[in-house]
Amino acid sequence: QSPYPPGPKPLPVIGNLLDVPRLYSWLTYASWAKTYGDVLSFRVGNQHIVILTSASAAREICEKPIYCNRPDIPIFGDRLMGWTWMAQLCAYGDKLHAQRRVLQSGMRAGALIQHRPMFEAKVHDFLERLKETPGELTMHLDKLQGAILMSLTYGYEIKSDGDLLATAQEAGQLALRVALPGALLVNHLPILQYLPNWFPGTGFRKLAERGRELGQAMRDSPVAFVKESMAKGIAQPSIARDALESLNTAGPDSKPSAVTEQALRDACGSLYLAGFDTVVATLHKFFLVLALNPGVQRKAQAEVDAVTGRTRLPTFEDQPHLPYIEALCKELTRWQPVAPLLFPRSVERDDTYRGYFIPKGSIVMTNAWALLQDPERFPEPDSFKPERFLTGDNLQKKETEDIINGAGFGFGRRHCPGRYVSEAIIFMTLVSVLATFDVGKAKNEHGEDIPISGKCSGDPVRSVKHLIQQFHQADGPQSTRGIPVLHHTASVNGVDAEWSIARLLGLNFCTPCTSLGSFPGLLLFTGPCRS
Ligand code: HEM
Image 1 (tube, rainbow, N blue to C red):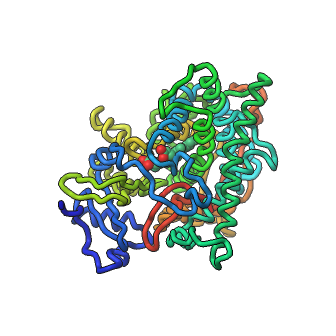
Image 2 (tube, rainbow, N blue to C red):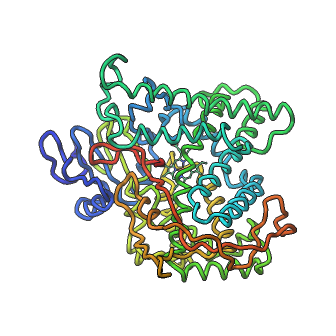
Image 3 (cartoon, helix red, strand yellow):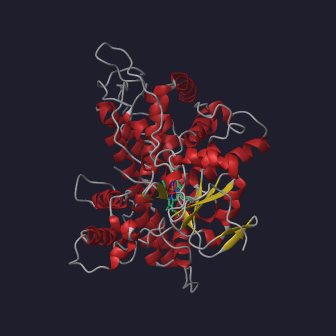
C-alpha cells in the first residue's frame, strides 16, 4: 500500500488530536505545509484528514467526483433533522446534479440581469434605514440580505412577521444551535441517534423534530406561494418562477439528473442558509475595511463620485467604469476570507493521489486562507491593497483571479453556485454606501477614535467575530456627503431624492461566523452559520 500523505507524527489511539489547535487552525496547517508539502495529512482518532495548500492540488482533487461528498453531521442526517436534501449537505449524485442545474441556471451572470432593479431597490432601502439608525448596521445588513434572497429565490417581498422569511430565519438559528462544536453530543457520538426516545440524553430529538418541520416548510410553502402567484399572473421574476416555467414547457425528461419539481423545491429551499451569512459577513468586513483604511475609502469614493458626478446613486451600468471598485471587491474576497478552510469534502472510496494513499472516508479541506495569503502572489498579504489587482500582465491576472475565485468560492464540481449573486450584491452595496456615507471609527467620550485592531478571531467557527466586535455603537446620523439616498420607489436618477445624508461614526455588530461544526479541536464542517 502507498504511504499516506506526509504529516506530523501521530500518537497511538488519539493520533494528532493534541497537535490541532482550536484557534487559528489554518495557521498551523499553513506552517505544516512548509514542512510536509501542499498535500499533507494527519489523524484524529481514526479519522484521516487531508489538507490541500496549493491551487493545483485543490483544483485536481476537488474536480474528481469521489472527492465531492460532504462529511456526515449526524444531527442533519435522515434519522434526525433530515436536512441532507439541502444542496450544501447533499450527497454527490443525481439529486445534487438536478439541484445544481436549477441553481446554476437561475444564478448565472446573464440570468441575474433581470434582477438588477431589485438589487438596486433593496440596497436603496438599506441606505434609508442605515441613515436613520446607523448603530443598527447589523440588523440592516441582515434585513438587506434576507429581503434580497427571498425576492431572488421566490419573488417574495418580506412582511413584518410570521412570513416566509421567519421560517428561514428560525431554520438558520436552529442550524447554528445544533451544529456548533460541542453543542450536541450526538454529533460526536453518532451511536446516540439509535437510542430510544425515553433514554436519558436524547433531548436532541426535540430539536431534530422542529428542524424536520422547518425543513419541510422551507421547501414547500414558498413554492406554493410562487405557484399561486403564477396562477394569478402576478408572479415576480425569481429562480423558482423561471424553473417552474421551464418545467411546464419542457417535455418529459427521463434522465436520472432531470430537474423535477422536488429538485426545484430542494434547490430553492437551500439558498437562504447557504447564501445569508457568507454575504452578510463579507459586507461587515467591508465596513471594517473602510474604518481601518481611510485612504482606500477616499480613493474609492473619488472613483464613484467621478462617475456619478455626485448627483445620483451608482447603478450596475456604472460597473465597467469603476476599476478600483472592482479591485476592491476582489481584495475583499482575499483579505480575511469568510471561509478560511472552505467547506470540507469527504472521500467516497480509497484513492491514490501523487503516489499517496487517501483512504475512503477521509475529510479533505483546502486551506484557502494560506492560498490567499501567499506573499509571493500577494505581497504584504496582511495589508488591504486593492491596487494589487490593477497591475500585472493578463496571464498573471488570470491566474490570480482563478485563485481568488477558487479560494473564495470553492474549487471544482461543488464550487459555490451563488458567486455571481454575491458579487452583484456586494458591488451594489459597496458603491451605494461609498456614494452616500463616510465610515469611520467610533469616538470615545473625549471625542478620540476608539482603536480597532482588525485582527481576526482564530476560532474557525467565528473567524470574523472579532473583526465585527471591534465596532462600537454609532453616535447617530450626521449629514456629510450630500448625495441623495433615494427611496426605492424613486427612479434611479433621483426624482424624489432626499437630500439628507448620514455619517457613520462607528458600528455595532453581532457575530456572524463561518463554520457549522467541529470535532473536538478540529474543524469538521466549515460553512456559514449565525450566532
Ligand atoms: C461572499 C459570499 C459567499 C461565499 C464566500 C461563499 C462560499 C462558498 C463556499 C466556499 C462553498 C463550498 C464550495 C466547495 O465545497 O467547493 C459554497 C457553497 C455553496 N454556496 Fe456559497 N458563498 C457565498 C454566497 C452564496 C450565495 C449568495 C448563495 C446563494 C444565493 C450561495 C449558495 C451556495 C450553495 C447552494 C452552496 C452549496 C454547493 C454544493 O455543495 O454543491 N453562496 N459557498
